[in-house]
Image (cartoon, rainbow, N blue to C red; front, side, top):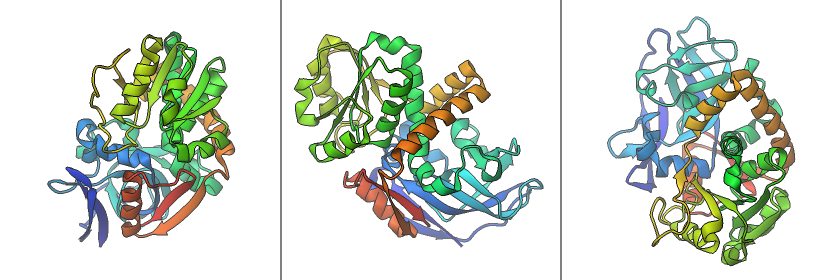
Length: 358
């Protein structure tokens, strides 16, 4: 028997848990038992833009019910693939569920992709699974941190890579909304190391300001009611909130000084994600889709150099964030849905990382 947590695609605050009898495995298939996954604002973004970017297609639900993708660890429970044995552990893209059946393709010592027909049209970045026994990023002592920060860190890395290739569009400062988000912190960390000439400013709620300042990733941290105090110099905006009024306020405050505006996430759900809030001064926001930029970066650097660059930046970042986030481990899919609902409502504490053991 397997269990799956689903949310209503048209009203993602509604959830249910479905119990299903597991079918026999086909030739070459592998059944993964999901050990753990994280619940972050990233998962909320997957749901918010699920229809636009096909995130509901990775783990199909039923009708208006969809399965939110997660990042986590799993163990091989059954195998009908000659190169993959029962007991092996992997890391990758997983459903909010107890089990996942995959059809491994392109199997190497380091990993494989799920070659199931419904996943072939999707970005290959999300279809790859790392085999932990030969995974250079795997640290048994930091599995929780990898689930919480890893996918978000890579998005931040790719944003910095794209901006740097474009000469930061001539900007002198980087402004991040939702600065307490893990992707924003990752971007600020990478920018500090590889683009030190750039001033980094974090915008956050008043309640999160001390937490953000404590991380040390930004030169300056301002609350949302201090947007008028933004320095009037050439700037780029990277928005992780998806709050139309907030984007409008920053564009209005900087006007012609804003050289590029990039929208990445939607942590402020219900705040007009993707909508205008009156005429928007400055450049039109551009939606950042990490998989496309990952393909571009890998093509530019080559797979080996790209992997080495990500790994080096990741090790610095995870070292700096060690101890800043308390790990909250919870059991069961009911706990997963509660954590998702809390994050959706904006009630999640940025100083706490939630790990679910379904």
